[in-house]
Image (cartoon, rainbow, N blue to C red; front, top):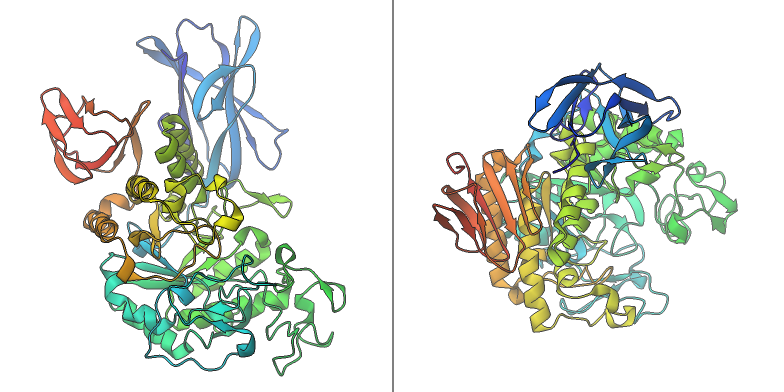
Length: 619
């Protein structure tokens, strides 16, 4: 029996984050054997943690062996708050603190977070309950229907003649600079339209497509032009139209924190007629960059000289990106995109992000703004300040790397309590509009592919061995089984599951560039692909159940269950079958193993996962 019960997802109303026009009701249960005096809620605003406001809690009643206390706070201003409880026990001051999302009586203070967001914060409805497909354009599909034109740095580009080659890297290329190309193009994506549709996707996130000297195209050369190896602006416009006709929208990678040194704006190699910042202090682009010793020493992204950093607070640069109609954002929205993924969002000042949102949403309020933040974005600290990405005036949502870590460690190491605390923490901290639209990923262009992570201990593989590394047969089968379980979690937790191209066919690979090999359907794992098709069909069929709403039902040593409205998801991590005593009937919607209803409860197989319609399933 616990001596104190409090969980902000259960014992607070509203659950988790709240709007700035809502009152907050806190309820706490304390073992009657504990001597309680002057129980208070202590809360402080993140802007000044030295000012701590105390609110006396009122005794309500006795519930079995617990004394119930409650307090209600009036509306709070938008922002971040932290709180805990305190009381006196035999004249000794005690705290009720947050330890891995469990309330415990302690001599130490460990707070819960209360996020208060703008009451008008809304996120696009069209993506909720949906599925994302991420494509790295150079490596997805090459269509022979497109003949590329000459690029500015064509003489430096290496063209692979074999689609199945391993990408070049520092292991095999002196002064490696990502200038090897496989010639995947926009027409190739169009050729795969039916394949993508068959995965029940409703949004495609495209890694950068703008003109660039390198295959990843994060070194932008011209913000208004598709790279000539990929296609043309007109082809891209048609691509958006063709996919929109089958219910799939595109969002583009917006790389606005830096440009390429080989670009119109910097022009280090004099490939462009107009003088860039590197060529002349009289260039209109010169104020966009920070030079230490002109022109050779300049600030660059993480020290990469090919990526000179932009002054993101520069008014002229902000205008260039965000200006109505004429700006970069509106230009591509006019061509048909439905939003942006903002590269390294946490490296932008608020003034830039505020204008970015204003521009995107004024053009189309249903456009989606997805930020790249690797940590909990609700309490991220950068630029010397606590950031406000998710309070309703900046991003819509975030790439959900914290949950990737939580899912991987759950299926590999089976630590249910740690998983539950991580999941509950994000659910508590994120505003509901953001929570419903998080990009839930297992793989991406920046991390190892999921089957490699789950099939082997990646830390034990040396960098030198990673180019030719492939999983053994046993490792692959292990990784595949765990990937299926991880994908089930990914598709049923709050947010939008994202499939990184090739993840669904068993593609392997360590980090860049080995996670960016070419998509090859001919050598795919058909069983895994069929599993993903079934999983996406399940999610699409019950889309409304996955749009919002989440509640943990049971958390034990080897079993987790949670509700997505009328759907109950159960994951048994034990190597033995278990009996779920609370259920003796129901409609099975999805599972990896047979289940059996008995008078004693539901029998669930070892290492299995399932989804049930629970309208009539509970005892």
